[in-house]
Image (cartoon, rainbow, N blue to C red; front, side, top):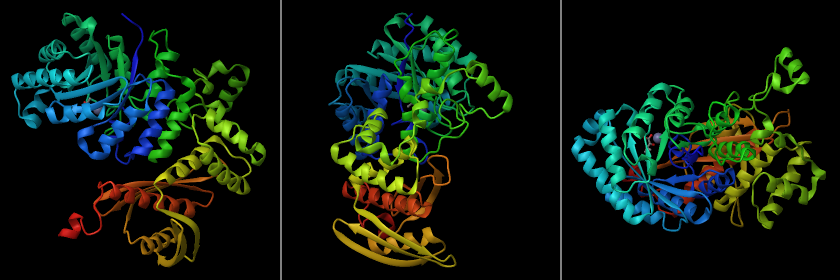
Amino acid sequence: MADRVEIFDTTLRDGEQSPGASMNVHEKLQIAQQLERLGVDVIEAGFPVASQQEFDGVRQVAELVQRPRVAALARSVPKDIERAAQALEPAQRPVLHTFIATSDIHMEHKLRMDRKEVLEAIAKAVTTAKKLVARVEFSAEDATRSDLAFLAEVVKVAMDNGADVINLPDTVGYTTPAEIHRMFAYLISETPGAERLTFSSHNHNDLGLAVANALAAVQGGARQVECTINGIGERAGNTSLEEVVMAMRTRNDIYPYETGIVGDEIWNSSRLLSNLTGLAIPFNKPVVGRNAFAHEAGIHQHGMIANKATYEIMTPESVGRGRSELVLGKHSGRHGLAKRCADMGFELSEQEITQLYTKFIELTDRKKEVFEDDLRVLIASMRDETFETYRLVQLRTSGSDPAMALVKLYHGNVEYVETATGDGPVDAACRAIERVTGIEGRLTEFSIRAATPGKEALGEAHVLVAFDGRSTTGTGGSTDIVEAAVQAYVNAINKYLALQSTGEAPLPGQSKSAQN
Ligand code: KIV
Ligand code: ZN
């Protein structure tokens, strides 16, 4: 049996289903580019039938990506499959991923179908998909709670109708390592012709077992693991890509499997996703958390000085971390800055570098040392300017009860100045912005964190704003945390306007609340 395990990344599909993780097309493309550099085998780009934005996201990822396969999800119904196939048209190596639930509880209560009907739906869906796209993956949703004998029939029907990959998800994060190992080993041994298929494992983390279950599935014969950067995904998330890959690498004696993942890109991928979605990485998160390689106890530090292997089972460099601590300053110059961005995996145009350099020099006036994490925040906010409609150029706040804010915004070349009062400086500034834009938003989530250590750290703000009919996220970065928050608010408004322009958010007067 081959010892190569394929990495199927579903950050842009299942990961994007995490509350607060929704990304616009531009953000999805940045992630897709990074996933290609990271060396994943498959990028699942979305669920095209869900909305026009999902469709466009999949199509544009399919146009952009060169080496990895690009997958699109579809329920086992013709309209989903046709839409997914259309979205995949530009892909060099498309995968149509179709699924239906196979557990009794899902079939009875959700699908209202019996086993025979589900087998017929699988046969029809896989046949239709195979006519449209060369490679088809079939998923038996809730496989780990499905009757094993029935699951064997499901696998056979999917294979006989042309499926290339059979995915057996632990949809609700219920299984255990011993159980999932048995399931894969049994189905592979009981399916004549199984060697023609790739078996895949997709695990949710409700009991904190997703990585352990994925590894056990591989030991049971799976040769594709579905996972996400930072483990994001429905509810408690999915198998974390960085953890499952580093487990195979660090314990290759127990898990003698190879992947195509470029370790050096793990840190960058994790940071980029967190910057774009605003989902913070817990400090103690294995492999990519801020503390994952920090040794606090004196006895540990002593051991590390004598020999790093005393307390370090993998090096920070092996996941691309060491580099991020190199400092940049005013004297690094435009060329040095451009080179560092290229090393971090950002392909910036000359115009973008000029724009970034201006922001970088402004930052070095306020902060002596600039780290890669600072640059990521600057790049994330700068690249969002593609969508920019309003630009915050000045903010002044004073007082506290009530607070007063003055904002100066540009809309194209037109300047607007407004003042307002509010419960605090951020509230006052948001009200002033509402007066300029005419768009009312409700801040439903707001987080601020330091991008790097130190008193003069760059504050990175993330907001989730509920507008009429739609919510959007926003990101901002500044050494002044109120300014960072207000930038993030403006960014969320700009994204809302972009959605209005594509018809994905209601225009003024068209929303349900306006009709009622
Ligand atoms: O968790 C799950 O079952 C899924 C399938 C659609 C693959 O995400
Ligand atoms: Zn899932």
